[in-house]
Amino acid sequence: MVKHHPPADFLTEYAAGVLPMAQSACVAAHLSYCQRCRHIVERLEDIGGAHFEQLDPQPVGDSMLDRVLARLDDPEPLRYARSEASDDRLPGLLDRLINGDYADLAWKRVTQSLSISYLKTGDLEHEFALYRIAEGGKIPEHTHGGSEMTLVLSGGFSDESGEYHPGDFIVREGWDKHTPVALEGEECICLAVLDAPLRFTRLRHRWLNPLIKLNAG
Amino acid sequence: MVEKTTQSAAPPAQNSGKWNVPTGRRTDEWSQALVSVGESQDRAAFTRFFRHFAPLIKAFALSGSSLSATHADELVQEVMLKVWQKAGGFNPEKAAASTWVYTIARNCRTDMFRRLQKFDTPLASDDFELESEEEESFIVLHTRRGSERVRELMGELPPDQAQILAKVYMEGKSHSEAAAELDLPLGTVKSRVRLAIQKLQALMEA
Ligand SMILES: [Zn+2]
Image 1 (tube, rainbow over the protein chains, first blue to last red):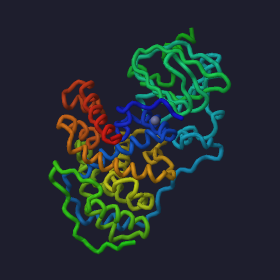
Image 2: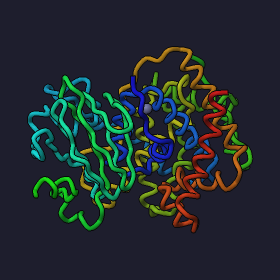
Image 3: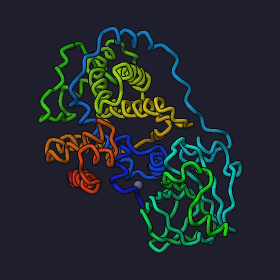
Image 4: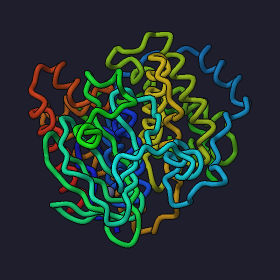
């Protein structure tokens, strides 16, 4: 049972299609776990539908109708099919980004209990990464400037404010300090989306977070 | 299945004070047309649908004036082709036809922006669609009532809240972009959106 949800701001921007790609993907992944938020998003999309039907119609010529009618029998573009190795429990869109098994990804070992794998979404303003935390493993206390979205994919973790399980969505803003610890019994895999401050974007593939610096000593 | 013979599509409402409630006759006609397209590839129904919705899609493409007229026309064609291809997945019990078209137009517009910006991504908006699952009928009923109430609510919002929702939804502006354009603090924009959404939630729970 999912207990932690994206704030209404994010769901509204998601329904309006204005969230940046990486954040949007994280919210969409949450929706695949959470019926409550799916229903909220449907209502938020109705706001779009209600505005849409009230727009001032702009003239469209019959020549365009003819062009569209002429293309109706064109073959539909191929839809992506899940890869054989994929984990059924994984949201489809993450499955597409991971394209196989967790084990096949390039993992960077950050501490004894934490490895990170960066996934490419094309969004240059946000890091989109999987965190793999050994059972009971700690992430050293860290802070960073921007916002951070986390979605638990498997296992779970706890921090000062609660315990989180698969599907739970956590947002932190600004300079909140927190020290997540993976639950015992199973390794924890989370999706984390971080603002990549502009000054770091050129070094995007090196995560210049205090955590890394601390670890690199 | 009921064959629609009437061609007398009412002209789209110009009066922005009037919000359509999907139980209204006119909206049901569009749901019915979509079902005919999905079930029997009904070109006449598609043509009626096109004549009504293509001008709205074009208006959507041009709002926020971020797409050229050429790109707006391209978007209209893309969206209408998707309408044809996806009509089989439309469930009139679950969504209003206009909301369904809106979500397709929204996704196509996002993809077009990304293409124009040479945004290099392995994902398309279609990847964000969730695999549909069977819903309990009481939830579907809840869904329809909710959809009607959202439209009722839109007519009752104070203008400052309505203006921001229009910017975000129709012009595709993020909260911070809307704040910059309206020369308002981001916190004000967020709280107006939040107030509107709270009313919506209160209505849905009532
Ligand atoms: Zn949720």
